Image (cartoon, rainbow, N blue to C red; front, side, top):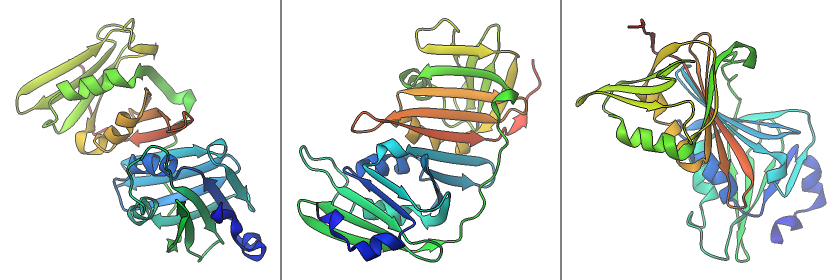
Length: 279
């Protein structure tokens, strides 16, 4: 493949080299977290983590494990940089983003370190395009201190059922209220929109419910504007884990299968809007 014909001299200077036979396996995941222009890329021996934030109230992380890449070479324990995500996606889709049977865009992503651009070598049908995207000093992502020991309630659902719920709830509502409880209504989504109040309930024994672990009754409201970005991830996913901790912080983890059937994860953290008194 032409992408492998770079000089040995260049190879030695890169602190990160990552190759994919199908660039869509990266671009589809990145599209799901593109709600702000800039993202922080963090490369470790485990793979690539891409973080996008909004107003210190919402954070999205995409995890692309080392196994997804055909090549993943890291010269340092940790490589991190900030980049314009919109520009990166435009480059990844330079040959057109639609999948045509039998064709795919191969990607080789190279980075020489602090102050250098991220260089993309894209090849399709023997044509190679080189893109260089300026990188910036990364801003330290927020640490929401969401740890499993503080998780009070957790459910795992098939994504189809959550898509159905969102199609039935009133999206003119400013907030989505989530109630999780060891007793009825177990798991309830509520909206308060132009057409009145709406509730969508899940039984803990529902076929759509793969796991139900609720230790206390919690009702929290979250700004709909902060939850809407996660609907792109929901559309791609086959399963979703919904967790809350003792502060009402919401964690949504989406399991996504790429074009080759490999599994990636998308995670969203969202701060509660306000505490709700139990009625």
